[in-house]
Length: 134
Image (cartoon, rainbow, N blue to C red):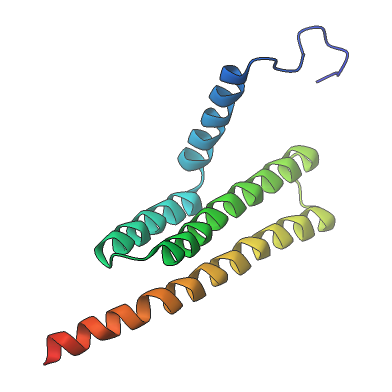
């Protein structure tokens, strides 16, 4: 799109900006299988957080981890779409590197989330198991 196109102008209304953002979230959930998996696991983790009655600090770590994974998946999807647009879906070694690095960022963030989950939930699950065995 040409930046001089008269139909292209910066959105000046907050409500319209929010509507575009919501549409972007809907698109990524609808079109990206991995995003649906991340959202599903995030919901399970949040439900487990209610069940185990986490304290404020634990809630903050869990929410940080869940939202970081979701945000990184959106960033990864954005990079993938831009590379596909620029390369017209043809292989390019630099495009592959960009996609691999973005996927690596999601992997690292998912690892962080898993570590946070283990640190917070493992002692609680262990205590639950000990009480159940007695």
